[in-house]
Image (cartoon, rainbow, N blue to C red; front, side):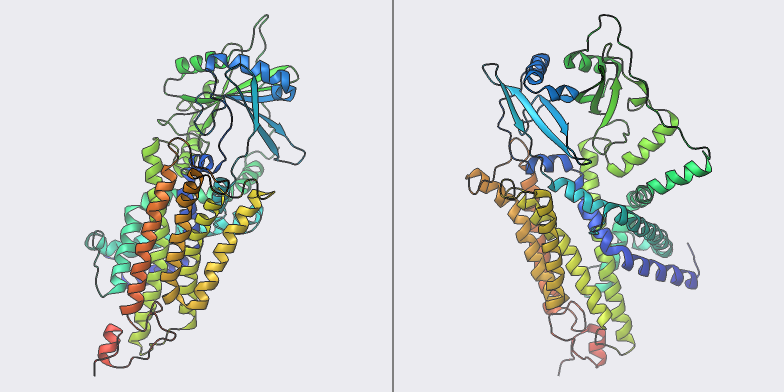
Length: 541
């Protein structure tokens, strides 16, 4: 495909500057977003183990509910029965009590011991997984949610522009350069090949992320505009009235509701049955998943049910939504990756990490391109703007990695030691993040890139080490029960990858071009000979 050179140049300039302006925030969004694909396992891994007895069979749930409500009458208002308890949370029944502040909810778990006596426990939910999701949503911005989301929306719009302009720039050489990865002395060509391959091969994923992020950022504004333009007389919101109780009918037991759900919606896996009672009226909702169909929730969806007959609300069942609801559910599901089961979640995880590398390589490519351009003009001393961008690229990227690893490791040590673990997770993250950026500016990008990669590897290694401390009963930490040890295994692999990255950065700083921002030197060397201008090294005497 042929496109005029002047048009290519315009789109290339747009792609470069839009990418540079948004790349660092997008790195945080994609790296944290990759981890949110396993938010629930991370939350369970980071939560203190339950001290309750093993769960009673689902058929004995009514007995457990009766004993719990007798001891804690407030539980009757809002409780749920877990269909498949896990080793880290063996409770069959949970109930929730709302606090005085908005959004404040205390959760409790109940079980019966071997003698049939009630045992309860206040749940200590780990906040670290939710904090990582906040970093993802707000692209790392330390502002209130209402302030950060519009800024994130602007960054997502820049992201869309960068995608379109990048594809147009690559079109003329798409076939020739798509699968080329030329590794050698030409660093610009190597980084360009890596950047192009990551971008084009994952382009559908990036288009979905960009468009859905814009919608999430301006969700409230879109609905306000819709209300004014489409419904000028205002929308009258309401709830479906609760079902009438037939004479003599009783609320169905959880086991029967699960059986009815399997009959009416094959393939829909029920995770929990939720009961809410208000003014003598009981409402039932089934929480579950169906990998075959899109759902609106990040992890699961809710299906309403008649508490007396077990009939499911048809419009809530995945795969049976109306046309508009199907479109909305598909939109959400494509962003959250909650379809297709574990294979899709792992694919989204890897695509998220690849996306973070796309933005990192984009910044490195800009720095290398600028160096070569200035060298062609006889300028070999790096400008301050290049040095600042190099330090920010190293500091923000590795600071994000190290900060998230540090706050994950801290999850095993904060419970029982601090009053507000959620606040301390934020303190740990931003202390490491800002300290890493400061170190990059203090040492320079060349030296700091290898040093901070090793530091990020060390903080990531703290994750499995904290679990091992729990195995040896050191300091109050705990070892993850069941299959959750895979979290430590992934962290161990990540630490190894960061060590390799540090070795590569150290080698690049030692033997790479002397006029590069990545050179291990206090100042760039002035190189003037023709040979030096070509290689970046002083000419041989």
